[in-house]
Image (cartoon, rainbow, N blue to C red; front, side):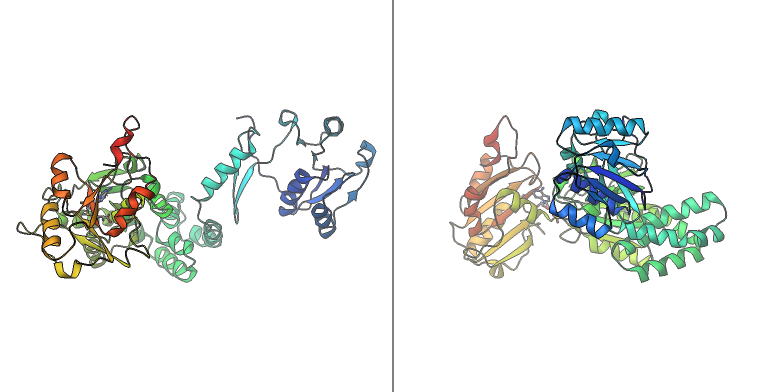
Length: 472
Ligand SMILES: C[S@@+](CC[C@H](N)C(=O)[O-])C[C@H]1O[C@@H](n2cnc3c(N)ncnc32)[C@H](O)[C@@H]1O
């Protein structure tokens, strides 16, 4: 580690900047945001910098740099002129007087550098690649920022206000650590993040009043993992997954998403292929309750969205009955993910004014649906779980009046690298299916919007060595 991030208290400390351009302006803004006092020596000065100094009572010396102008004991000096010779002279002065120096023109001559900073109230995250590339640091900052909810500052304040009380109620350090772990990663933190401080306080008071019970009650996160591409998971899903002790997942959760499960978490596969449930639904419900009652944070990870053909409602009904706290994190349902990645807008002013999600699952060998209600030129239909019943679905739609030339698409393993999109017409698809080996999971889209797929397809899915594979 070339530079170690020390956090300095700069309030009321005097700092000197030599130079009056854009870099000087940026540094001045950063320093003023910490409460430091900033003076500037520069011949030419940006108007905004001049204004900042005026407002902050900083001294501005509009003269060529000379050591004699440095009249205070400065805490640090920043040489930000565009002259190497002047920066060198400033550097020599700083070294001779043991004042830490930052040189904008040469990081190897810096005593300190400015990191990219994520500021969340009292929480500060400093990012540096040792001055290698400020742009890279800024990109990293943007990425990391998205994982740190704005509410972390408030959470930190909230915790700070309760510390003395918790110390009094739980004198043993190990009890306190345990207690804080639960507070900071459970329903109380989530209430703070959603801006509900009254609920957060009520939950906190309740937890502190009965710390034993609190520790013993876990929580369940019903998380929608989206249709396959891990980038489609929400930040909230990712955050809750990271703090899970146990993860119950089914077949539709892609291996790339399972790679995001923390290594320490126990993984329980509960299957869910049609007619091949590794674990029965009632047993899944029971497992969720049992693990939560052991005080664990349990994630129930489901493909797509938990409330769209996902039986998520049944699972949380059981949790509610057993008084187990839970949260639901929506996911991108297969219809949204597959259609977007196939270039098929589900609604379009010219082609479809509504969209309907339908189950294509067979019941006693037939698909039990209100067919007349489904027939419309201006509607898009999305059939889930319809692969094995596809010939029956196509035939039923036709016999109830849908046009033979209605455009249809079958999206296989949508949003993943193996995505394949088969487009055809209602009349021809069953025959084409006999030639193509389409496998599960697949989604069937029926509607005039499908004709846009050729024009709007954008996702470069499939085997890179076989680009033709993606659209058939
Ligand atoms: C039991 S349903 C679960 C749906 C899920 N809860 C959702 O919101 O997407 C399973 C069906 O979703 C569809 N499906 C899920 N993921 C898919 C994917 N990546 N590509 C195509 N279809 C998918 C298939 O029709 C599959 O049979």
